[in-house]
Image (cartoon, rainbow, N blue to C red):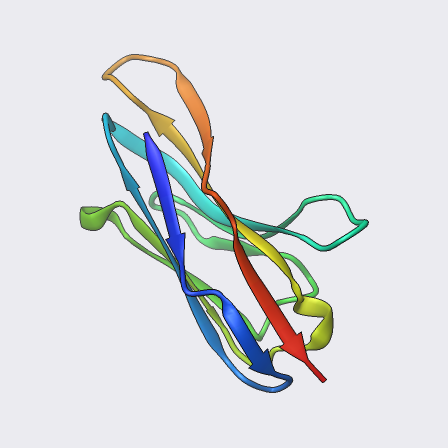
Length: 120
């Protein structure tokens, strides 16, 4: 299973970016897809996630500004980021919890990371 993320870049404070992440490979089902981020010197932290058939979950720091969505038919997750702040600067990693075969176990996969830089 591979996760391919895209959409990062440089934006001014107050601007917007949209991240995308597509999962491909041997996939029976995806339980969870989401985004984490890691700023220099910090631990990787959850930004937002969405369980299949469930409600989105957001970090307090992004509530009201970021929106996560999924296209289950395309095995793709999106993160719409509005009102960006310099403290949102980080590498953003796509994350998925995948069942590879019917009745099999769940495995965690990560994308390669995409840089988001917000200038003040």
